[in-house]
Image (tube, rainbow, N blue to C red):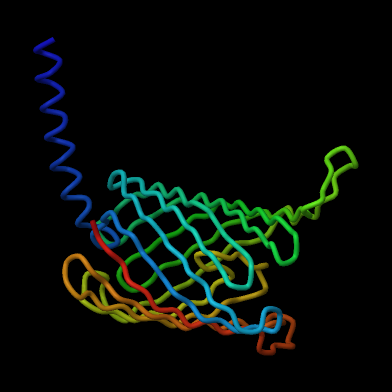
Length: 240
């Protein structure tokens, strides 16, 4: 028993030292955090609306982190989901494998929307890129399993994202620009890009403030692009 306890203490110390060293490499310092946002949006479907969202990030180890996400909207839709992200840190940046699952309750339209996807990405101080695939299922509220399928599915879609940063991740402030067919709470078809410009400032070791503006055209890759929506977002992150 004493020998097992002794070996356990040695292993714990080694893992602790290794974790501290690894957490300082890769994509900045990974820490437990809670992120809260308030958004104002306008689009041709909902007109003006507001969103309230939160994201909890849990880095279990230098090689694995999880996110829980929740969004409430005055447009009468609600989104919940999670992300599992195994990681391989390098001296410069890190490679990650992302599993994402998301449920959207479109109460205004009486529709359930479920998305799930897998992707591979690489992120470093100045660039973050991601590519994968996802599937989506729409089910009406009054769906009866005894009456057949009764749902619409998009079996295969491409999931992609590219983001560039002006400064290294450990700097007190940073700005970024991205183009993707997804954000924290929505995944669009592969030809429907979302453009985002944002910035953040670290007040101290515990608090960070950030702001973003997001623009979504329609028909972008069909040579018939026109305005569809714009969202402005402000919020803060608290690091535990």
